[in-house]
Image (tube, rainbow, N blue to C red; front, side):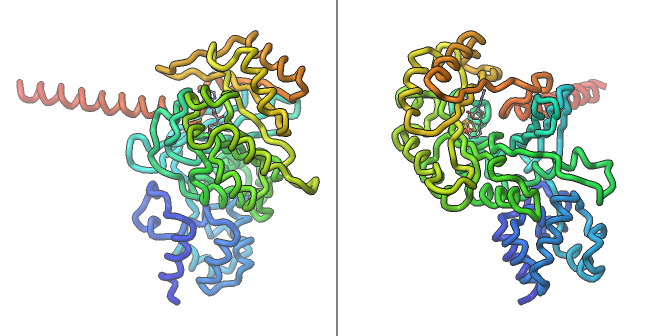
Length: 410
Ligand code: SAH
Ligand code: SF4
């Protein structure tokens, strides 16, 4: 089998490369950044090399944040040359980054040519004394088709799925941002937790998200604990069951309403998979055996919308709904965005809601709103950058039109 054919088959396994790759030459190459270990091993075997090279190269990429094969000192010059010819290591292009005073970091990546081809990633450090926990919120799609009524990503509509290099590239970039100026061999992995809570519905981009999470857990890559990788879903029931078979990671459910009538309105996928089915899937997810599993409870996310889902009656309904499901509840103060049809529940309302759930024996926390100075909320920075790009384009057109008038008059 020729190298050319081999490289093509490895690409098709790993999904197409980012269309944002800068040169025509690199578009034809395999992007090693996005390959899981089995995919990387297959790739090396197919180009006539030993399988163990996969682990070596993965360590250089994901633990030492190297993108240049020349720096991979335990790989022979001959193999490095071969790799340079047929592959690249390429993270998506950063078009905007913002590092807030409170430690929050935010990136906007361009993953295509169109105005809307932007995704965002947010890093939120823990508010504890050590500051050691760093949680990265990763996007899985450009936009989202599910159109939840309180979500700015949903309002942008669905553009496309991210490929594996674009998903894992977000984690790679966040880690790299702390290590850029550190000599290669002294570099460390800084991000401790990942939540698939950025733009998009991760279970609707299943294979790419699954393989990316495998890279997160892999000891040759990020070596993250399975309890520290959380997939958040609005409730794609069959895919929750599939995930239980394929990987052991933590699960968060975007519940947001305690009855079908209200949830149909807020989270429209509820019409397809109503609460009874969703709760049953969560129960199937909870591991029946072994202490080692991350599947001891599910996290229930509940966005607090003023006067919509935040009354004590709703809290009582929640208590009933979740009584047979080991769960931890996280109340999220609504993050407003332009033209949003909701307001954020008052602090007092949120605290009363929390108290009702705690009194009933649930662990219930309130999410801190961090990074407000850089607007670190789901889908919102992308909106701003897109707006700015649009305004810049409009401005350029206006200036060009004025110049044209001046020229024609002159
Ligand atoms: N699609 C997945 C993951 C991405 S959304 C899901 O829905 O779970 C990540 C979380 O942010 C979800 O719980 C979502 O409901 C919440 N969210 C979306 N828009 C929000 C807003 N404006 N304010 C607060 N939370 C929001
Ligand atoms: Fe999509 Fe999640 Fe936003 Fe709903 S909340 S529109 S599923 S990203």
